[in-house]
Length: 597
Ligand code: F6R
Image 1: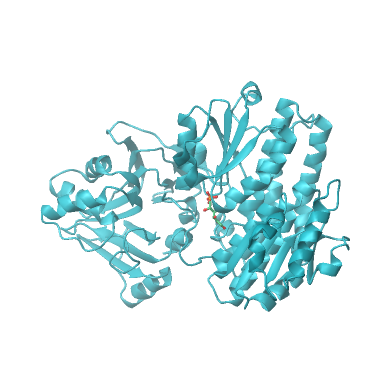
Image 2: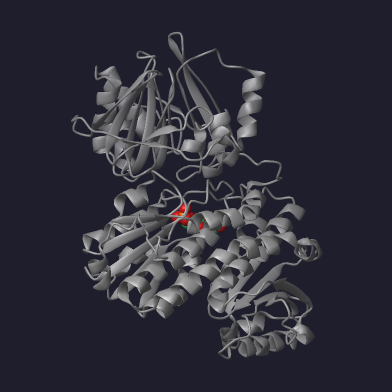
């Protein structure tokens, strides 16, 4: 149950377990949060066992009910199976099984796998061979884990595209979607490749491919411990992760210089000569990671003068994008498991492009399938709404941009060093933002009953506006929209009426007219009755007459301001959601890593 609790962030609409006990499979399944299953097990405990499987679900096929919860049992009751992913050809397989007399208990695609594996072991195959045979028939994405009452010392897992890691303990072994499930017991993990079967007993494991040939996982040691996966006194993981941002960003930046103060991104295994031939950069990501990419575009183009496009991963491969061997594709993914992004990686590589993954999760699929990886080293992010993930993604993209500028000679060494010095000053400034959040918290309490919010920004402030709006949508369930401040007058300004809160990211005063233009945009909405909340550099008094509320940020240059401006918006959303009584870490309808397309 502890392991399931740590996995709950990946899906939380129902949960279940199955155990091998004596000569029988026993199981319990409950719709709703894990607490419901816990209550059920307290009321009617299952017998002791040393082999079991458990699952928390994010529904794709079939509503979140007790019967649709996993594990699913085979018709004879001999096999129990859990599944992550989507079985795309489930309808034809189900029809085949039903014609053969199998009566399905659930509406899920997953039960098809349980019934097929059950039928195969009933026909005499070992559980591993049954899983292999079934894996070969399934289309789509899956991690399957099954137990067979007749082999009570071994479980078998099969993996295609959905995550799976093995944890190696002393006299005990684990398999899970990610290491936080077993981090309490062991930090030694084995990364599983694609299309593998793993048989696991208490003291051994064996990896084979879908054809039965020997295969090998890649062992690694997890560099964080259980405390990183616990709330540490905070009410929400999200709040803890917001407050971890100074350290997380510092970790992203750590150790990136050699003795001559030249940037060295050791993990980038693409040669400098290849990076010099790049004529286009395409950043591909989803959600918050996509917004990190939008921020990065401004910096990367400015520093490298290479055109940089940013694309939503789920749209990427379906529009026949122009990708050549001279395109550098950069994917951004906190989890490293997002199916849309993974498919974009594969598509880009098929077109001959080099792919660099910016990722937070060691051992995950996207970095493994990419040509190179830049880890963000933010530590585990468990709150469903990404916070430290976002800031560290921006920081890592900036490192990459500066590195490309160094390799391609588009910036002098001292210019790069100056930006790096400023980047290295950001953790302390983020801390300053976190040290004065009283005003944002009070504002959240004041505005929590408003039905609608607008967020405006220009330049790098625009993706910050999008991110501020997304945070509020996903955890507070409030209508919120982000716009480029200059675009408002082309339509969306019609949304502005008396009292609507409009958050505006004001760029620092500087060399261009950006600052003054944003001030004009604030006046435009204020003139129409908006309640203006401005995020502004401290000491910038020009905006004062038009601001109902000022949230002050320490000084940063335009390109680096997003690392500060995002923070009050995260706190605002977290607080509004808390006031409204929502589960901040597990917002409705969402899951942390979206491993289905
Ligand atoms: C929003 C959020 C999502 C993720 C998106 C990509 O707070 O968390 O929008 O950013 O699902 O996830 P990763 O970065 O794991 O690929």
